Structure formats: structure tokens, C-alpha cells
Length: 223
View 1: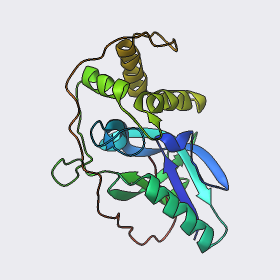
View 2: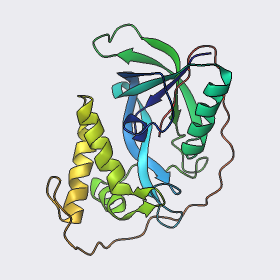
View 3: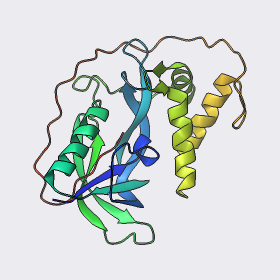
View 4: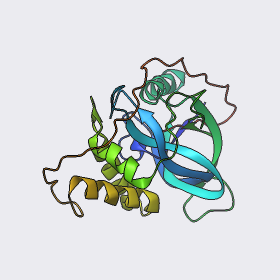
């Protein structure tokens, strides 16, 4: 089996596992949104971060990077286990078609896995849902966890999308709003500024193990 994984969040700039091939491209009918809570990397249960997930929107496209792992079942299993630990807040793995840059009509890969989340606060406790731009910016500006702060996640994604030549307007708008909250402009140094506002709702740290459906072709995922 050949293992493919699609990254649209931190995997774009920090895959964290050994891979054999990386391809820039996009998937159709999904857009990137900051509607998912992270409580163990960039946030905590008391102050969850906002990280990327995908929202189904017919006609939309989401750019990112696809990674291929070859070398036999053992190597592929190690990569999958690493990604499942890393992407533990995502409760679904969705099979998608992946398109290369300059080839928008025919998919370059089929049966690709991407980590997604159920957009329902009742069945998925990590789903925060949409919020006003200012509210999201305030949360991202203040949240931090064992792997760093939430704002660096956003700023790194902004730079990564620029680096692959496909900036995301929503990411840019949100990043600029976070800079306003921090009292910065562009990539300036934050000024000491007290940030007020209601704290995000605390989340429990336990979630049932993800279920992986059997795959017939390629495999993909993201954070």
C-alpha cells in the first residue's frame, strides 16, 4: 500500500514524519476554517486554541501539501500512528481526490485521507463552531499550550501558504486581526497590552479512539 497524507494546517510546514515525496496541490469542495479546539498542543482544556479544520462548501478549493510514504507496511504504520496521535482532536478521516497545480480537471490522486471533524457541538466536543473575527482573534492571541502559542500556529500557516504560492484570504484576515489584538503591525514585536474578554469554554481531555476505515487506494490526513 502507498500511503498519502494531505496537509492543510501545520502539516504544510511541519510534517514531523519521514516521507518520500511532497506535492503542492488542492482538494475540492472544502475550505479551511478555524473552528476546532486544540487542548494539548497549542492550548489547554481551560483555554483551548483555535486550529484548522475543513468545512464542506461546494465549489470551494483548499490548497496544501500531499505527502507520500513508501517502504512497506511497517514504515507506513509508523507514519499513521504518529499522525493519529498528533491529529487526535479530529474525529473523522475523509477520502478525497487530490489535484496538482496546473491540472485542475483530473485528480492526480484518489482515495486520499484528510483529517476532518464533525461540525456538531453535541457529538464532537472539540468542535467550537464559527465565531466573529474579533472573538477568534482574541482567543488565538491568548491561547498557548505545551507546543507553543496559538498565534504562532496561525502566523506559521500564513507564511507557509505564501511560500507555496497560494495565500488564503481568511488566514491573512485573521492573522492581521490577531496582530491588532497584540498591538502589532505586520511582523512587528507585540506591545505589552492587556487582553480582556471571556475565557473559552474548558474542554475535557478524553476522546474515543479514531476509527480508520479500510482503504483501497491512497491515504491522507492533516492538523
